[in-house]
Length: 397
Image (cartoon, rainbow, N blue to C red; front, side, top):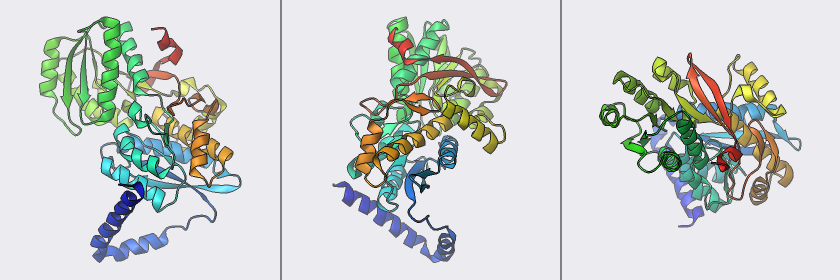
Protein backbone atom coordinates (compact mmCIF):
# COMPACT_ATOMS: atom_id res chain seq x y z
CA UNK A 1 0.00 0.00 0.00
CA UNK A 2 1.38 3.39 -0.85
CA UNK A 3 2.14 5.68 2.05
CA UNK A 4 -0.25 8.40 0.92
CA UNK A 5 -3.19 5.98 1.09
CA UNK A 6 -1.94 4.60 4.40
CA UNK A 7 -1.52 8.04 5.91
CA UNK A 8 -4.97 9.09 4.65
CA UNK A 9 -6.46 6.00 6.26
CA UNK A 10 -4.81 6.82 9.56
CA UNK A 11 -6.15 10.35 9.44
CA UNK A 12 -9.62 9.12 8.50
CA UNK A 13 -9.56 6.83 11.53
CA UNK A 14 -8.58 9.72 13.76
CA UNK A 15 -11.46 11.81 12.40
CA UNK A 16 -13.91 8.93 12.94
CA UNK A 17 -12.75 8.52 16.53
CA UNK A 18 -13.18 12.21 17.24
CA UNK A 19 -16.76 12.01 15.86
CA UNK A 20 -17.55 9.02 18.09
CA UNK A 21 -16.50 11.10 21.09
CA UNK A 22 -18.59 13.91 19.69
CA UNK A 23 -21.54 14.07 22.08
CA UNK A 24 -19.26 15.80 24.53
CA UNK A 25 -17.41 17.53 21.73
CA UNK A 26 -18.58 21.01 22.58
CA UNK A 27 -15.99 21.38 25.34
CA UNK A 28 -13.26 20.03 23.06
CA UNK A 29 -14.24 22.49 20.33
CA UNK A 30 -14.12 25.40 22.79
CA UNK A 31 -10.69 24.26 23.99
CA UNK A 32 -9.43 24.11 20.43
CA UNK A 33 -10.80 27.58 19.72
CA UNK A 34 -8.76 28.91 22.65
CA UNK A 35 -5.49 27.55 21.24
CA UNK A 36 -3.24 30.33 19.94
CA UNK A 37 -3.09 30.52 16.17
CA UNK A 38 0.20 29.55 14.55
CA UNK A 39 2.49 32.48 13.96
CA UNK A 40 2.18 33.77 10.42
CA UNK A 41 4.98 32.34 8.31
CA UNK A 42 6.30 30.25 11.19
CA UNK A 43 8.55 27.29 10.41
CA UNK A 44 6.95 24.14 11.82
CA UNK A 45 9.14 21.48 13.40
CA UNK A 46 7.38 18.28 14.46
CA UNK A 47 8.15 16.65 17.82
CA UNK A 48 6.87 13.19 18.70
CA UNK A 49 7.68 11.73 22.10
CA UNK A 50 6.11 9.42 24.71
CA UNK A 51 4.51 11.95 27.05
CA UNK A 52 2.15 9.39 28.58
CA UNK A 53 2.45 5.63 29.13
CA UNK A 54 5.40 3.51 30.26
CA UNK A 55 8.08 5.77 28.74
CA UNK A 56 6.63 9.13 29.78
CA UNK A 57 9.44 10.08 32.18
CA UNK A 58 11.99 9.73 29.38
CA UNK A 59 9.82 11.62 26.91
CA UNK A 60 9.33 14.50 29.32
CA UNK A 61 13.08 14.86 29.86
CA UNK A 62 13.62 14.98 26.10
CA UNK A 63 10.84 17.52 25.63
CA UNK A 64 12.66 19.74 28.11
CA UNK A 65 15.74 19.65 25.89
CA UNK A 66 13.87 20.46 22.68
CA UNK A 67 11.90 23.29 24.28
CA UNK A 68 15.06 24.76 25.78
CA UNK A 69 16.85 24.63 22.41
CA UNK A 70 13.85 26.35 20.83
CA UNK A 71 13.95 29.04 23.52
CA UNK A 72 17.65 29.72 22.93
CA UNK A 73 17.42 29.40 19.13
CA UNK A 74 13.84 30.51 18.35
CA UNK A 75 14.25 31.74 14.77
CA UNK A 76 15.67 30.83 11.41
CA UNK A 77 16.26 33.44 8.73
CA UNK A 78 13.99 35.85 10.59
CA UNK A 79 11.13 33.36 10.93
CA UNK A 80 9.85 31.96 14.22
CA UNK A 81 10.30 28.21 14.72
CA UNK A 82 7.07 26.65 16.00
CA UNK A 83 7.25 23.28 17.74
CA UNK A 84 4.30 21.02 16.90
CA UNK A 85 4.33 18.54 19.79
CA UNK A 86 2.60 15.15 19.60
CA UNK A 87 2.33 12.40 22.21
CA UNK A 88 2.98 8.90 20.85
CA UNK A 89 1.72 7.48 24.18
CA UNK A 90 4.57 4.94 24.45
CA UNK A 91 2.69 2.90 21.84
CA UNK A 92 3.99 1.62 18.50
CA UNK A 93 0.74 2.05 16.58
CA UNK A 94 0.21 5.52 17.98
CA UNK A 95 3.80 6.40 17.08
CA UNK A 96 3.04 5.71 13.41
CA UNK A 97 -0.26 7.61 13.70
CA UNK A 98 1.25 10.79 15.13
CA UNK A 99 4.15 10.79 12.67
CA UNK A 100 1.61 10.59 9.83
CA UNK A 101 -0.47 13.37 11.37
CA UNK A 102 2.53 15.67 11.78
CA UNK A 103 3.37 15.24 8.11
CA UNK A 104 -0.07 15.25 6.50
CA UNK A 105 -2.05 17.58 8.76
CA UNK A 106 0.55 19.84 10.33
CA UNK A 107 2.78 19.95 7.23
CA UNK A 108 6.05 19.79 9.13
CA UNK A 109 9.25 19.51 7.08
CA UNK A 110 11.34 17.79 9.76
CA UNK A 111 10.51 15.71 12.85
CA UNK A 112 12.41 15.32 16.13
CA UNK A 113 12.04 12.09 18.13
CA UNK A 114 11.59 9.74 19.59
CA UNK A 115 12.63 8.26 22.90
CA UNK A 116 12.37 4.48 22.49
CA UNK A 117 13.77 2.52 19.56
CA UNK A 118 10.56 0.51 19.09
CA UNK A 119 8.58 3.75 18.79
CA UNK A 120 11.04 5.19 16.28
CA UNK A 121 11.07 2.03 14.17
CA UNK A 122 7.26 2.04 14.08
CA UNK A 123 7.35 5.46 12.39
CA UNK A 124 10.25 4.62 10.08
CA UNK A 125 8.28 3.81 6.94
CA UNK A 126 6.07 6.87 7.41
CA UNK A 127 8.98 9.33 7.29
CA UNK A 128 10.78 7.35 4.59
CA UNK A 129 7.86 7.12 2.19
CA UNK A 130 6.72 10.68 2.86
CA UNK A 131 10.29 11.95 2.37
CA UNK A 132 10.23 14.00 5.56
CA UNK A 133 13.40 13.55 7.65
CA UNK A 134 13.33 12.57 11.31
CA UNK A 135 16.12 12.97 13.85
CA UNK A 136 16.01 10.45 16.67
CA UNK A 137 16.74 11.73 20.15
CA UNK A 138 17.78 8.63 22.13
CA UNK A 139 16.64 5.68 19.98
CA UNK A 140 19.87 3.68 19.97
CA UNK A 141 18.92 0.44 18.16
CA UNK A 142 20.83 0.26 14.83
CA UNK A 143 17.63 -0.73 12.97
CA UNK A 144 16.19 2.78 13.43
CA UNK A 145 18.42 4.24 10.71
CA UNK A 146 19.54 1.10 8.85
CA UNK A 147 18.12 1.12 5.33
CA UNK A 148 16.21 4.36 5.99
CA UNK A 149 17.68 7.42 4.32
CA UNK A 150 15.19 9.66 6.11
CA UNK A 151 15.89 8.66 9.71
CA UNK A 152 18.91 10.08 11.52
CA UNK A 153 19.81 10.32 15.19
CA UNK A 154 21.65 12.45 17.74
CA UNK A 155 22.65 9.51 19.97
CA UNK A 156 25.26 6.75 19.79
CA UNK A 157 24.10 3.24 18.84
CA UNK A 158 23.81 0.03 20.84
CA UNK A 159 26.80 -1.88 19.40
CA UNK A 160 29.00 0.86 20.90
CA UNK A 161 26.97 1.22 24.11
CA UNK A 162 26.94 -2.55 24.66
CA UNK A 163 30.69 -2.81 24.08
CA UNK A 164 31.34 0.06 26.50
CA UNK A 165 29.47 -1.70 29.30
CA UNK A 166 30.97 -5.12 28.51
CA UNK A 167 34.45 -3.64 28.78
CA UNK A 168 33.50 -1.90 32.00
CA UNK A 169 32.26 -5.17 33.53
CA UNK A 170 35.39 -7.05 32.45
CA UNK A 171 37.70 -4.32 33.78
CA UNK A 172 35.90 -4.51 37.11
CA UNK A 173 36.81 -8.17 37.37
CA UNK A 174 33.68 -9.93 36.08
CA UNK A 175 34.51 -13.30 34.49
CA UNK A 176 30.93 -14.51 34.14
CA UNK A 177 27.77 -12.43 33.83
CA UNK A 178 24.01 -12.85 33.61
CA UNK A 179 21.68 -10.85 31.35
CA UNK A 180 18.09 -9.88 32.11
CA UNK A 181 16.24 -8.44 29.12
CA UNK A 182 12.85 -6.88 28.46
CA UNK A 183 11.85 -9.10 25.52
CA UNK A 184 8.98 -6.87 24.37
CA UNK A 185 11.40 -3.95 23.98
CA UNK A 186 13.57 -3.76 20.83
CA UNK A 187 16.05 -1.52 22.62
CA UNK A 188 16.56 -3.96 25.49
CA UNK A 189 16.90 -7.05 23.30
CA UNK A 190 19.31 -5.34 20.91
CA UNK A 191 21.51 -3.87 23.63
CA UNK A 192 21.62 -7.20 25.48
CA UNK A 193 22.73 -8.92 22.28
CA UNK A 194 25.58 -6.49 21.67
CA UNK A 195 26.71 -6.67 25.29
CA UNK A 196 26.76 -10.49 25.13
CA UNK A 197 28.81 -10.53 21.93
CA UNK A 198 31.33 -8.05 23.32
CA UNK A 199 31.65 -9.73 26.71
CA UNK A 200 32.18 -13.19 25.23
CA UNK A 201 35.02 -11.80 23.10
CA UNK A 202 36.67 -10.62 26.31
CA UNK A 203 35.88 -13.47 28.72
CA UNK A 204 35.39 -16.35 26.31
CA UNK A 205 32.51 -18.61 25.23
CA UNK A 206 30.15 -19.54 28.04
CA UNK A 207 30.98 -16.46 30.10
CA UNK A 208 27.33 -15.33 29.85
CA UNK A 209 25.85 -17.89 32.25
CA UNK A 210 22.17 -16.92 32.11
CA UNK A 211 19.75 -14.90 29.95
CA UNK A 212 16.42 -14.18 31.64
CA UNK A 213 13.37 -12.57 30.02
CA UNK A 214 10.49 -10.43 31.21
CA UNK A 215 7.74 -8.33 29.63
CA UNK A 216 7.17 -4.57 29.77
CA UNK A 217 4.95 -3.84 32.76
CA UNK A 218 6.03 -6.87 34.80
CA UNK A 219 6.38 -6.23 38.53
CA UNK A 220 7.40 -9.61 39.96
CA UNK A 221 10.86 -10.89 38.95
CA UNK A 222 11.31 -13.53 41.65
CA UNK A 223 11.37 -16.49 39.24
CA UNK A 224 14.02 -14.95 36.97
CA UNK A 225 16.13 -13.78 39.92
CA UNK A 226 15.97 -17.10 41.78
CA UNK A 227 17.29 -18.89 38.72
CA UNK A 228 19.91 -16.19 38.13
CA UNK A 229 21.14 -16.40 41.72
CA UNK A 230 21.75 -20.14 41.32
CA UNK A 231 24.10 -19.40 38.38
CA UNK A 232 26.27 -17.22 40.66
CA UNK A 233 27.30 -14.52 38.15
CA UNK A 234 29.90 -11.86 38.98
CA UNK A 235 27.67 -9.11 37.54
CA UNK A 236 24.27 -8.62 35.89
CA UNK A 237 23.53 -6.60 32.75
CA UNK A 238 19.87 -5.61 32.69
CA UNK A 239 19.05 -3.00 30.02
CA UNK A 240 15.40 -2.05 30.06
CA UNK A 241 12.86 0.58 30.93
CA UNK A 242 13.62 2.61 34.07
CA UNK A 243 10.66 1.44 36.17
CA UNK A 244 11.01 -2.30 35.55
CA UNK A 245 14.80 -2.09 35.93
CA UNK A 246 14.55 -0.35 39.30
CA UNK A 247 12.04 -2.93 40.56
CA UNK A 248 14.26 -5.75 39.28
CA UNK A 249 17.32 -4.47 41.17
CA UNK A 250 15.30 -3.80 44.31
CA UNK A 251 13.96 -7.36 44.33
CA UNK A 252 17.41 -8.76 43.58
CA UNK A 253 18.82 -7.09 46.69
CA UNK A 254 15.92 -8.39 48.76
CA UNK A 255 16.76 -11.91 47.55
CA UNK A 256 20.36 -11.49 48.64
CA UNK A 257 21.88 -10.89 45.20
CA UNK A 258 24.68 -8.44 45.92
CA UNK A 259 26.67 -8.43 42.66
CA UNK A 260 26.88 -5.24 40.55
CA UNK A 261 24.00 -4.39 38.21
CA UNK A 262 24.63 -2.54 34.96
CA UNK A 263 22.33 -1.06 32.33
CA UNK A 264 21.94 1.43 29.52
CA UNK A 265 20.98 5.04 28.96
CA UNK A 266 17.27 4.56 29.80
CA UNK A 267 18.12 4.41 33.51
CA UNK A 268 18.93 8.12 33.68
CA UNK A 269 15.53 9.33 34.93
CA UNK A 270 14.42 10.48 38.35
CA UNK A 271 11.75 7.76 38.29
CA UNK A 272 14.53 5.15 38.32
CA UNK A 273 15.93 6.67 41.53
CA UNK A 274 12.51 7.14 43.11
CA UNK A 275 11.44 3.54 42.50
CA UNK A 276 14.81 1.93 43.25
CA UNK A 277 15.68 3.88 46.38
CA UNK A 278 18.80 2.87 48.27
CA UNK A 279 18.93 -0.52 46.53
CA UNK A 280 20.15 1.03 43.27
CA UNK A 281 23.12 2.75 44.90
CA UNK A 282 26.33 1.72 43.14
CA UNK A 283 24.81 0.53 39.86
CA UNK A 284 26.52 1.52 36.59
CA UNK A 285 25.01 2.60 33.29
CA UNK A 286 25.97 4.32 30.05
CA UNK A 287 24.90 7.83 29.09
CA UNK A 288 25.77 10.44 26.49
CA UNK A 289 26.34 13.46 28.70
CA UNK A 290 27.49 14.62 32.11
CA UNK A 291 27.35 18.21 33.27
CA UNK A 292 30.83 17.98 34.83
CA UNK A 293 32.32 17.09 31.44
CA UNK A 294 30.78 19.86 29.31
CA UNK A 295 33.31 20.49 26.57
CA UNK A 296 31.75 23.01 24.14
CA UNK A 297 30.46 26.59 24.41
CA UNK A 298 27.02 25.28 23.39
CA UNK A 299 27.11 22.82 26.30
CA UNK A 300 27.89 25.60 28.74
CA UNK A 301 25.07 27.74 27.32
CA UNK A 302 22.74 24.74 27.63
CA UNK A 303 23.72 24.08 31.26
CA UNK A 304 23.28 27.72 32.30
CA UNK A 305 19.87 27.95 30.67
CA UNK A 306 18.75 24.61 32.11
CA UNK A 307 19.76 25.52 35.66
CA UNK A 308 17.85 28.79 35.35
CA UNK A 309 14.77 27.13 33.85
CA UNK A 310 14.68 24.20 36.29
CA UNK A 311 15.88 25.80 39.52
CA UNK A 312 19.41 24.46 39.72
CA UNK A 313 18.75 20.92 38.44
CA UNK A 314 21.43 19.25 36.31
CA UNK A 315 20.38 17.73 32.96
CA UNK A 316 21.26 14.21 31.90
CA UNK A 317 21.95 12.54 28.59
CA UNK A 318 18.33 12.32 27.40
CA UNK A 319 17.77 16.06 27.69
CA UNK A 320 21.13 16.89 26.11
CA UNK A 321 20.55 14.60 23.13
CA UNK A 322 17.10 16.03 22.49
CA UNK A 323 18.61 19.52 22.56
CA UNK A 324 21.22 18.33 20.06
CA UNK A 325 18.57 16.92 17.72
CA UNK A 326 17.08 20.42 17.47
CA UNK A 327 20.52 21.88 16.69
CA UNK A 328 21.05 19.33 13.90
CA UNK A 329 17.69 20.25 12.35
CA UNK A 330 18.35 23.98 12.75
CA UNK A 331 21.77 23.71 11.11
CA UNK A 332 20.29 21.78 8.17
CA UNK A 333 17.49 24.31 7.61
CA UNK A 334 19.96 27.17 7.75
CA UNK A 335 21.79 25.55 4.86
CA UNK A 336 18.91 24.09 2.85
CA UNK A 337 16.04 26.47 3.55
CA UNK A 338 12.76 25.51 5.18
CA UNK A 339 10.49 24.60 2.25
CA UNK A 340 11.92 21.42 0.72
CA UNK A 341 12.09 18.39 3.03
CA UNK A 342 14.30 16.47 0.61
CA UNK A 343 16.89 19.26 0.63
CA UNK A 344 16.68 19.40 4.42
CA UNK A 345 17.35 15.65 4.51
CA UNK A 346 20.42 16.14 2.33
CA UNK A 347 21.70 18.87 4.63
CA UNK A 348 21.16 16.69 7.73
CA UNK A 349 23.08 13.85 6.07
CA UNK A 350 25.97 16.25 5.45
CA UNK A 351 26.23 17.30 9.13
CA UNK A 352 29.91 17.60 10.00
CA UNK A 353 31.69 18.96 13.09
CA UNK A 354 28.53 20.66 14.35
CA UNK A 355 28.98 22.06 17.85
CA UNK A 356 26.44 20.41 20.16
CA UNK A 357 26.16 19.78 23.89
CA UNK A 358 27.74 16.33 23.57
CA UNK A 359 30.74 17.53 21.54
CA UNK A 360 31.28 17.96 17.81
CA UNK A 361 28.66 16.00 15.88
CA UNK A 362 29.33 14.39 12.51
CA UNK A 363 26.88 11.92 10.97
CA UNK A 364 28.18 8.84 9.16
CA UNK A 365 26.71 7.19 6.05
CA UNK A 366 24.01 5.48 8.17
CA UNK A 367 22.91 8.76 9.74
CA UNK A 368 24.51 7.91 13.09
CA UNK A 369 26.90 10.18 15.04
CA UNK A 370 30.24 8.92 16.27
CA UNK A 371 30.48 10.18 19.84
CA UNK A 372 31.73 9.33 23.29
CA UNK A 373 29.85 7.55 26.05
CA UNK A 374 29.77 8.45 29.72
CA UNK A 375 29.54 5.84 32.48
CA UNK A 376 27.61 6.91 35.57
CA UNK A 377 26.50 5.50 38.89
CA UNK A 378 23.99 6.45 41.57
CA UNK A 379 25.60 7.85 44.71
CA UNK A 380 23.55 9.28 47.57
CA UNK A 381 20.52 9.34 45.29
CA UNK A 382 22.30 11.37 42.59
CA UNK A 383 23.61 10.40 39.16
CA UNK A 384 27.39 10.63 39.40
CA UNK A 385 30.14 10.55 36.76
CA UNK A 386 32.51 7.56 36.69
CA UNK A 387 34.31 7.64 33.35
CA UNK A 388 34.20 8.76 29.72
CA UNK A 389 34.83 6.32 26.86
CA UNK A 390 35.74 7.45 23.35
CA UNK A 391 35.02 5.41 20.20
CA UNK A 392 38.76 5.21 19.49
CA UNK A 393 39.23 3.47 22.85
CA UNK A 394 36.97 0.67 21.63
CA UNK A 395 38.85 0.22 18.35
CA UNK A 396 41.88 -0.93 20.25
CA UNK A 397 39.95 -3.71 21.99
